[in-house]
Image 1 (cartoon, rainbow, N blue to C red):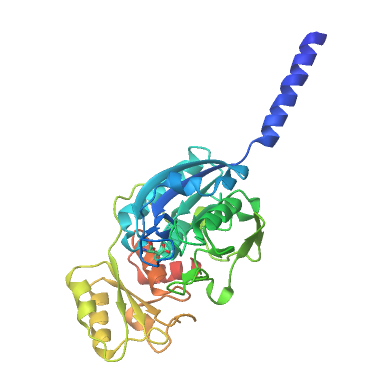
Image 2 (tube, rainbow, N blue to C red; image 1 turned 180 degrees about the horizontal axis):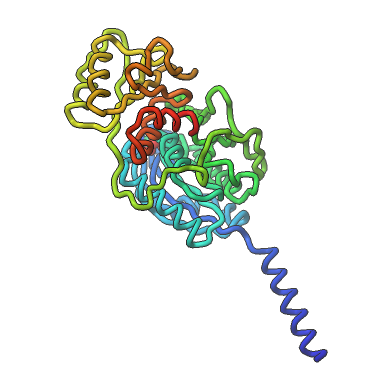
Length: 350
Ligand code: DGL
């Protein structure tokens, strides 16, 4: 009996030791971008994105092995200017599978910075987990002097293992900063400090391998989201029309002729149209093509029933979403409803 007791005690001690020392399981999904880019010479700004594979990215920052039990997979290897609905659907389904069926504690996605904000917001609306999902990229290619990719990847893993990053939606991690999926925006074409968090600012930062959260988002996301892509093989077609003085109505008309399901206006000021474009927009809405008014202005909401009587025309106001994110929400909203009032409600909530 005494012998059995000693065996049990050793077994319990081993389990506790293994339990305490087990690192979080983090999966890194690579999609390409500058972080995987190669420049002609380390000092040159001429480069091609999406050239090196996931293992090269992981080998460049072995310190992540101190933070987590790391494994990786290559989903695609593209410049994110080529990101598309097919990759979005694959990525969302794969993240949900990793977090809900394969027991991972978090996911890091390496991604180009050009459309990172759109992918982050799409995942914010379609990931069904409160575990951390962190996107990371870089503004300098992998072989550049002072490449920023390895540090961004290290910080993204540090965020992914942090309990503070649970339940606050999908985040982007760039230049030591954490930015939430709804407000993150690329603001500079070449600066490493290109990402900002809009009027509400960054959501937190990473310092010395620790995540520090300053604020939490108040919009619906991830597990609270009604949008489910698990059975979707394609997404509704939504285009964006840019507004400017004396704007041509041809782009808007082209989307109507191509039977798009929705059209977002990157309007002037508070989401206003040039008169010729306005006429086509009204006809489009009457044909059942949902019009969403957003703005080309970098900050400020596009307000409901301001200079445009949305109630009268059944247009939706994008509120705090810029055109590229309004497009993401409209695509997913159209998988649930074509009712303009219900879609407007989604813009209030997400
Ligand atoms: N081709 C751009 C992209 O993949 C490069 C920008 C970057 O990743 O920093 O988004």
